[in-house]
Image 1: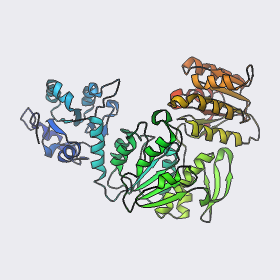
Image 2: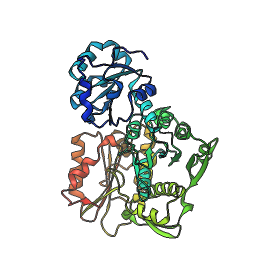
Image 3: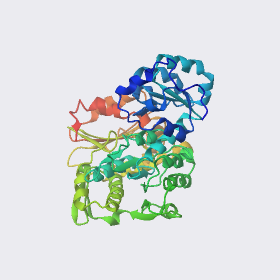
Image 4: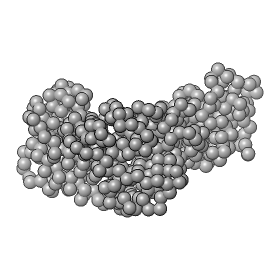
Length: 497
C-alpha cells in the first residue's frame, strides 16, 4: 500500500488519541475503506484511531465524526466545501487523486489545523462512495435486501411496503427519494445491526446508473412497478428504459425473487433470462375493489377487507406490489391490513389537504404516465358538491417527446370535467393554446414558472374558488406548484387530511 504521506499525526504527540472519547464503532475500518475503494491514505490517524459513523456529500449535512465525500459535477467541484465540512468536525475526507496531487500543500495545512482527520485519495469520489457503501452493505448478510424501481410509483411502493413490513420487522429505508447514484449509497449507510429488512428504491437518469447502484445494494428481492416514459428524453425509447430498469436484477442468484407487474407490456422481456423466482402481481390478487374517492381504495385480500388511504388507481397498483412482497415474506393478512392503515402520503405525492377547498398536491414529479394516472383519477372523482379545478405544469426531461406528451395531457385534461383549467409553464401553456379553444373563460395558459407567474395563478384561484371545490396540482418538481397551495391554504382554511 503506497502512502502519499505517512498516516501519523504530524504533531507526534498522540493527538489522535483525543478521539478516544468517541465510541469506536466506525462504519468501516480504514483497512476496509481502502480495500473497497482502492484508496490511498494521504494524511491522518493510525488504524486504531480511524473512525466515522455517518457519511455526507453535502457539507451542510456533515456532522462531527462523519465522513465527507466531495462530489465533482459539471458545474461545481465539491472539494471547495472541504473547509466547511472540517469546521463541522468530520473525521474522514475522501478526495480525488488528482486533487490530492495538485493540492497536497493545502491538505497538509488542513491536517495541521485538524490533526484527527484522515484524508484518503480515490480515483473518483462518487465511485468511491458507491464502493464504500457496497462494502458496508456486505457487513449485514442477514439483512433482507429489497430494491424497488420503475418509471413511476417507486417512492409510494417503498413507503407502503415499509409500512407493511414494519408490523413484524425492524425496517430501514431511503429517506424521501434518496435513490440516485449518490442517494442510494448514502441511504445504505443508514443500515444498522438491529435492522432486519432494508427497503430501498433505486432511480436513474442516465444509462448504466441502475447497474451501478444495484451493485451497491445487491437486492435479493427486486420489484419493478412499471415501464413508462420517465427519462425517455435521456434513454431514447421505452425499450431503452426497460433494459435499464431490468438491471435491478443484475446481481440475482438462484434464491432471489423478482416481482414483475403482470399488466405491463414489458412483462415477458423483464422475466427473460432471470435467475431465481419470478412473482407476477396485479389486480387478480384481490377482489371487491371499490374506489373511495379522496379517501383511497377498499378491496378484499385473503379474506379480509382492506383500505389503502391513498387515492387513485396508480397508488392501488403500487399497493399490490407491496402486498406481493409482504406475502412472499410471510406476513399474515392481519399484519398487512394493519400496515396499510398506517400509510401516510409524502410531501407532493397524492397529498390530500382538506379544508373549505380541498387541494390534491401531486407535484413532486411528473411524467406522461403519472400525469395520465392523475388525470384519470380526477376524471373519475365524484364530488357531492363543489367543482373540480385543475392546475397542471410542465413535465421535464422529455426531450423530443415533450410536445406530443404535453398536447396529450391537455387533451386528457379537457375530459376531466373541470370548471377551470390552468396550464402552467412554457411547454404546457403552448400545448394548452394549441389544443383548447381560444377565449374560453375556463382555460388559462401561463408561461414560465417564476414567482410572478405563480402569483397570477394564486390571484386567479383566490377569486374563483368557493367552498366545496377540489383543486388538483400536477407537474414536475422543478415547477414548484406547491407554492400555489402554500399561498391559498390559509385563505381557504386548508389542513392536512
